[in-house]
Length: 128
Image (tube, rainbow, N blue to C red):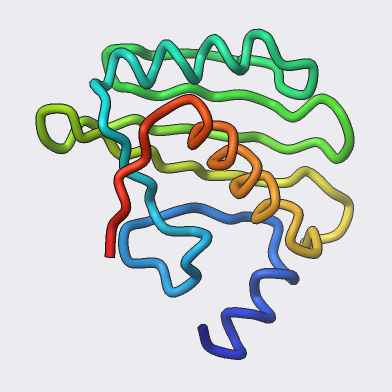
């Protein structure tokens, strides 16, 4: 990861995952499951969580939007895409609400915590 990217990680209020992200912690995660099962697992986790509040869901498009209600406020969009039979990609986008235009890496930490939870509940496919 370049020095510029490393600095940007801490001095930005937005983070999102993608397939070929240079930061390994911000790469799309793939799971061996169907889109519907992944959607239901994630939706249930969020509904049972004290930290997140579900704003809207679209099962048809595989998207959930939610807010962080404990600690620093943030807006999160989770996209669930079935790429192959029983291979589902999950991407996360986080924007932190703050007075300053940066969050000192808080958005990245939220993504890491969400993926950690999803990895416990869904079978992760290791991508090289």
